[in-house]
Image (cartoon, rainbow, N blue to C red):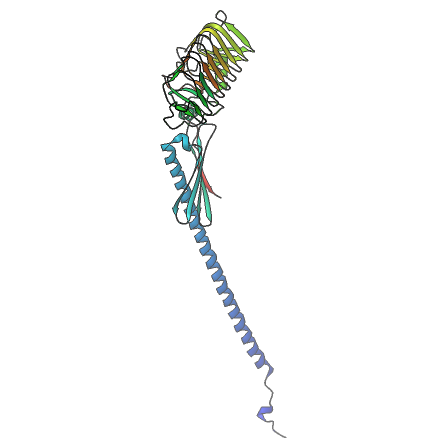
Length: 366
């Protein structure tokens, strides 16, 4: 029998299978390791991105808080200028803050500060504690004899204004005397009338007085009259408790005296030798308050600031001790004397003069 040569012998099948399996295993492990490496790189980059983003948000938060601090400092130097304003600042080449302020209906000032650092932004909000009384006190100077949203006209005769005069519009001056500063949002005629200091902030046409509070007082210790009224010295009603007379309509007064505050949800016309005096327990109360026009004529004396949401017209030997505030124009003629208040600010809201509201502050991410 012939012996087979070694080279003619066949290799066992299982040997080739084992070699192929080992190669596949090595390739699989290499692929797994490569994927693991890529995954680690991706996770590392994501982690670094999150760290950078957190740091940038923290920087933005710090910038927003810096903006709050900056605005509070500005409010401390000039409250009326900055209570409704905006400013921009920066602490680094990549960081900026934008701050705005807005007065609230409760007398507070809302401060909103946006801090921006790189691609991150953050916002902080603070409501600065205030009161309506303080807010109006900042806007209305105690030495102001006349404040008007519209045109002020002082004409014909020896008028005497012993205090500051300010109009958001024009001021027309005649032959009388103003012993104070004259400031205007428009033109002053004649132009050499004495513009000698920074104008006050424009007065709000809506006015500072809370008519609802005076209505409440009239119904609780005062006198309330419904509809248009014509009152004479003989029938001018005198509130006994708090000195508040409220007329829900137009009011005409023909002479007489009254002690307290007269309020009308309409126009007020006063004629012929009328004297108003402050109520003994409320010396800082206004004299006349009107949602319409106040028209005074012929020998009247009023002790306390008067306010009209529309216009104020004064003629012929009238004296006002406390000043006048008009939401429209003010027209004064013939021997009128106006003195500013000497007892401080009036009661803008007699039911809530100095109660501080809640302070609210907080911040969040955009």
